[in-house]
Image 1: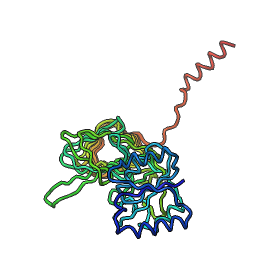
Image 2 (image 1 turned 180 degrees about the horizontal axis):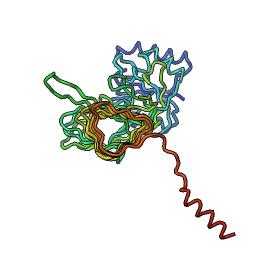
Image 3 (image 1 turned 90 degrees about the vertical axis):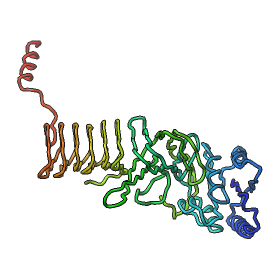
Image 4 (image 1 turned 90 degrees about the horizontal axis):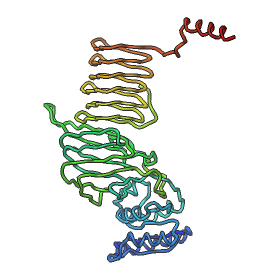
Length: 245
Length: 131
C-alpha cells in the first residue's frame, strides 16, 4: 500500500497544476494510494508515524528536501520503504538518489528499485546525506581506539551519501561514514588546503565551545559533544538509475 | 602500490592521531601518528610526516620519519628522504640513496621453524627407551 504525504507548500495555487498532473500519472501507473496533507499546525512526524502504525508499506514524501527529512526521521527503525517525489528543482536528495523533479519521478516510483542504505545518527537524530560544522581545536575519538586532534580552525564534515568531489566517493552501503576534515594553512606560497579523510563506524566529536552542527544542510544542532554512528542498511529507499552511488 | 578494494584513509599535515589506528584499506599519512598502525592495505608516509608507532601493512612507501617496529607483508620502499629507527621486516626491500635505517632488518619469506637436530635425536632416544 502506498501512502503519500504532501507538504504544506503544495497547497499554494502555483502547485495546483503540478499536483494534478502528478496524481493523474500515479493513477495511470496504478500506484495511487492514500493521500495525507501535512498542515502548519499538525506535527508532521506524528502524522507520518501514525500512517506507519496503520500499516503503510511504502511512504512517499511529496514536496522538498524538508519533507523527505521528516519522512526519514519518522521511518526510524521500521522496514517501511520510502519514496520521494520532489516538487522543487533545488533538491539535493533528488540529485543524489537519481530522482527527477515533478511528474517524471512517478516512473521511478513505479519501477520500485529499492535499495538498503546506511543512515547516520548524531545525538539521536538521523541523517542521510551529511553533517557539517566549523570547529576550533576539535578532538575526534573513533571506534573507542584512537583519537584525532585537529589543531586550529577546521571544517568538519561527516558524510554518508554525497556528491563525488576531491574527497572521493562515499558509499552509503558500506556500513561506514566518512569523516572529512579541511584545514587551511598559510605559507610563503599562499593559502594551501589540507584534506584528511577517515572512514568510521562510530565517533565522538568534542570541542571546547558549543558549535553548530548542520544535519543534511538544514536542521541545526548546538552542542559541545556529538555522538555519531552509522546504522547499516537501515533505510529502504526507492532510487533511480542516475543515483550517485 | 597495489590497489586495494577498500576505501582510503588520509591523515593530512597538522592532524595528530593517537592510539590503535586500525585501517581497512589504504592509508596516507602526512601528519603525526603515535601508537600502532594496522592497515589491511598499503601505507604511504609523506616527507613531512612523523610517525612513532608499530606498523603493520601490506605494502609501504616511506618518505618521512618513522620510529617503531615495522612489519610489511610485501614490498617496503624507503625513499631517499626517509628516516627509520626500529626493527623492520619485509619480503622485498628497496632503499633509496640517503635513506637512514637504524635497527635490525629481516627480509624474505619466513619459513616455519624446524625442530633442532639435537632435540630430534634426543626424542628418538627417549622413544627407544620407553619401548
